[in-house]
Image 1 (cartoon, helix red, strand yellow):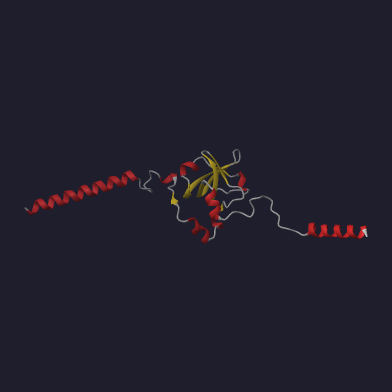
Image 2 (tube, rainbow, N blue to C red):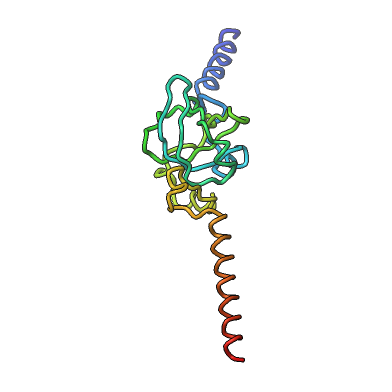
Length: 172
């Protein structure tokens, strides 16, 4: 009788233990939604990888669009070793990063990936963002600075005032 009870208990334990469940290598898997990761990140941007540095495990980006943070914060690069992906120079990526000034790290298990891997509805979730001006475009005529715009408006206003004054003087 004891052997039968013991056999039944062992059988029940084996059945319970043998039933496969879902296993994840990390507690962050499955990945967060884009909205959850956006909310949890300090920096969110789209950028082209200019170069990667294997010594400090950082990537430098030409920032194209910013949803969260600033171009200055991204400045000297983002540590990307925790992304578990190798970045390719010249490719566009969406990057979600956390950290503090000068110590930004791409989120582990995050949604940072090639821009081309995003679906249109995911891009729509991000919204329009702020377009960043590439460093090469500064001072080359490709970008209009705020001071030049103000100067043009003032000159145009002065020219219009002079024309009105000239015409009103001719009518007398």
